Image 1 (cartoon, rainbow, N blue to C red):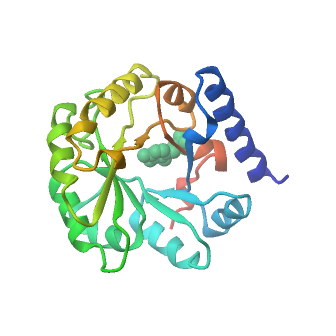
Image 2 (image 1 turned 120 degrees about the vertical axis):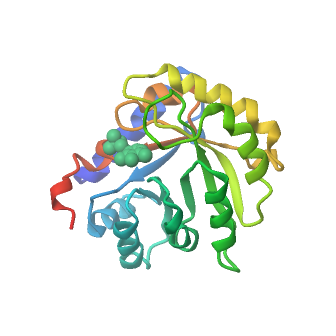
Length: 230
Ligand SMILES: *Cc1c(COP(=O)(O)O)cnc(C)c1O
């Protein structure tokens, strides 16, 4: 096994162990490979190791990789901050957008999805632990957003995404409660199946609390070198 294969196997082992401990099946947790700052050649290598879904944060960087890796069957997730004037590219080029925190963003994504494309999968990002950051809606706004967004024709509202402060594992339990509470607001409650939480440092706590998708960068690819970014 090469290094990337080993690191991926190690993350799978971690997922499996925690799932066993909390009585979940390992298949109930998806591994999203967060590949920001890494070159296309590295993604290609990770694809060869069996990885199919990749998460990117920066639009220009992501668009270049999507173009360079057209020949692969990758499921592309945008996990960065969504700017209102960037929704067109997101709607056309990605399979998932995790950072939707306002109705207007979801509405634009739905309007800008191309004819013939399947609905765009989206998650509502919630500021679950009251951080100062401007990303994510407030927990008490989620029910109404679910009700509104789930009526849009060209997006499929799948669940919630949270990024709690480091070490704040209690926030994962709060996210799980909210995730279950608001399902009944959804026009198609069966679509509501994704709780996107947990990164390299806290994926075990997130899975124990009910995460269905962990977004893992460093543990899969090694440390990021932001200075190398063009
Ligand atoms: C970068 C990033 C990750 C991955 O973080 P690691 O600590 O490298 O696993 C996950 N989610 C989001 C939103 C990110 O920006």
